[in-house]
Image 1 (tube, rainbow, N blue to C red):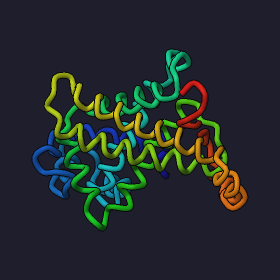
Image 2 (cartoon, rainbow, N blue to C red):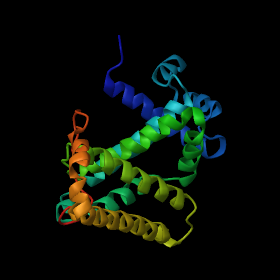
Image 3 (cartoon, rainbow, N blue to C red):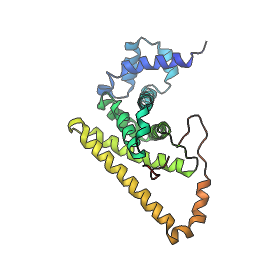
Image 4 (tube, helix red, strand yellow):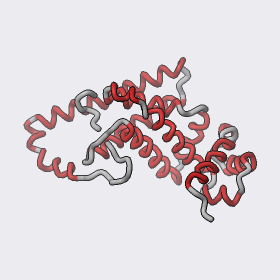
Length: 232
């Protein structure tokens, strides 16, 4: 009988919990995967069925579990009182604070920097930023859906790399870095708005307007926003 989704999640969580103590030393490797199977008591056949790529799939599961924990943190009425940029800052900070050991994240970054796993790494970052935009109530359905996630992916990736090397008290240097990156984005949005209202921008509105016909993918939970919208 096939395992239920809940059962699969439970087994994967057991493997992840067992793997966490090995990743800082052996990385997301075959050695870590084998140790996780032994330590968790999960049947090896079941473990390989759930994680065909072994530790790579465990690393993916670890990242997605962090996303889920972040979303749970963002399910807070306090968000309703925040401006867009404050929501984004809070979300990124919450996501990084879900990581109990930076070495585990560092090892994951190394893994997904490898050419054969780079596409998976990019998908994970995109998934994180999509989860953030969705959680804060983004509702765009055109090209903005893509540009917001692409922009936030760049901000998030840069912030993670800075955070991995930050030894400041309470990671204050990282949060200052994040604020600067978001401010850069806000300035870009203001410049874009000024261009769109300029004579040249209005002249280009026809050709550029065709891009707005791009539609966001339709899947449950798809809800995008605007970096430069009122209240940001």
